Length: 451
Image (cartoon, rainbow, N blue to C red; front, top):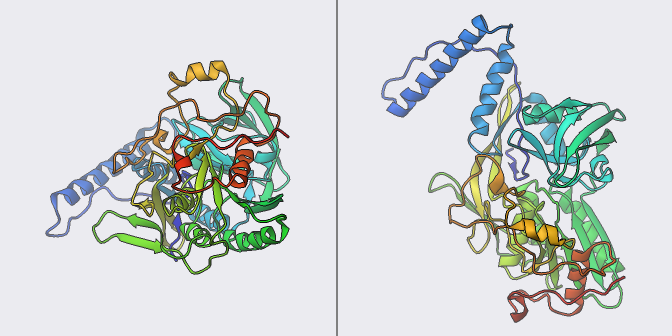
């Protein structure tokens, strides 16, 4: 079965194999493009043979070929990659909801390993690893320039084994974080009652998400007291996951209709995905929290609820991954490729590729200092899909908003722990979480009380 995978993880894998080809026979009637492709493959074989015979040391032929495969796929876009048999198995385990590691979703950027988001409750999360951090060394050995999958493999190991990761974070000196490897069983859904408001956080979209969501919604229904004012759906730092899970999640809040559509390379490669009949909270007001770490499947849910005028979005602009990857098995002992096969579009027909989803209420998590504000105009580096090498262009011309001062920031006297959540709760209690209402234009939520 194919899996449509939407997390912004760039992986590079290695397979065993050799090249024993120096020429290719062309079938009759092949196009000039195919002839050129075969000539390039012949060139590759020639170069490999030269390296095998003349390089200063003996090379690992299989590894060289694999690196060539990875380079070819990486040149297409940031999310296409080869999965060797072990990596393919790891990916299947990851989507099942349990795997070994540190609990960090990562991508590659300019030769560096960059954190998309740490998963709640994992060693990385507890150690304070943040979205946007760069990982530059493991156990004191540099991983700069290393293929991403090789770096990821170094982070994995026996459960209970220690590991030291060097982190580069904007504005501070590089520092080491000491972690202990664990079996990662991410808590995909967290719920609590905040008085008369329900709070539900989804950390990833895997095969366990929908079941956990249903249980969480039932718990929220029972725990909320004093009249149900609304629900906060927290998708911050959710890196995405399975397309199927995002459709099922959206279905809990809408009464049928389109959730997302996809368009591939050919005219006939178009599909529309409608909500399944599984509505749990069809009428409760909803505020969805997003930030720069909300990606792919999380953006599908947020975009669908926004376009369907089922929820208002609060926070900061999301990551902006508007493409779908299909996992294509290559056969026994050959692994698979994760290939970008289509773009996706929200119910209103908009592509968020590179641009992200802009919130209805722009609220910063922390207050920017005068220095931060002064540096915004000159700050070129941002953490988003648009910044990744070889990222797909937005086919509708949509662009990400440049760095700017958010419409709402915590006041200087704010003493709470989560300003965005506080503002979402205040919005629901004030009855202003109305999609498309007059309060939506350049508006900010009512001020949340300081705890």
